[in-house]
Amino acid sequence: MVKMLGLELTGASLALRLILGALLSAGGFLIFYYLPANFVELASSAIGGEVPPAASGLLSSLIDPALPLVGLALVAAIFLCAVFRGTKAYGPVTIALSLVYALYVVLLFHGGAISISVPADLLGGGLPFGASLSVSVDMPVLMVLFLVPALLGIVKGFLLILMTRRR
Image 1: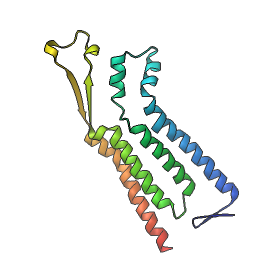
Image 2 (image 1 turned 45 degrees about the horizontal axis):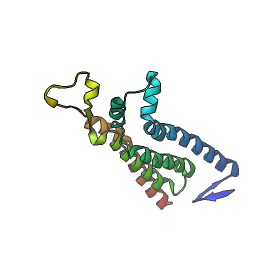
Image 3 (image 1 turned 30 degrees about the vertical axis):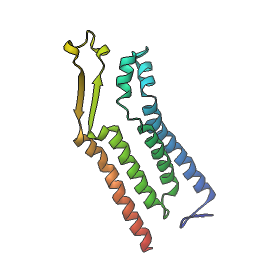
Image 4 (image 1 turned 90 degrees about the horizontal axis):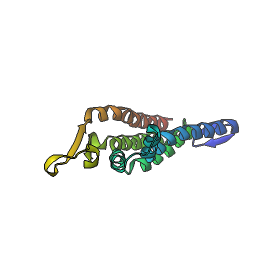
């Protein structure tokens, strides 16, 4: 028996938690790190050719540069949640996971408004008088909807902390 932060586990149970944590982290790595970090390359392979440099810059502006790094922190928090489930550390780790996920959502939605400057090369003949084109999409309501699970996770973490203190 292994005692881990107030929870007794068998060796097989601990191994199963570690394997589950590794599998969940691998899925999280693919979704939260690999896809944003390689977005332009994946888009060029999806269309079957090379993306023009102007379009490549446009696609890379959709992904915040800090997003993959926050994705790595999210992967670590996912692993810790899987391993520490049911222990005294599960509440704080759940809060950390929820906060990192909230930061990820805010970065993904660029704070609720995604603004893209369209290069003149993509417009064919360009715009008259040296004008430029900028597209802005406001999505604060959608971002808030994606933040609801994070807020619920924070509440869950605090409730777990309160419940473990009463024991």
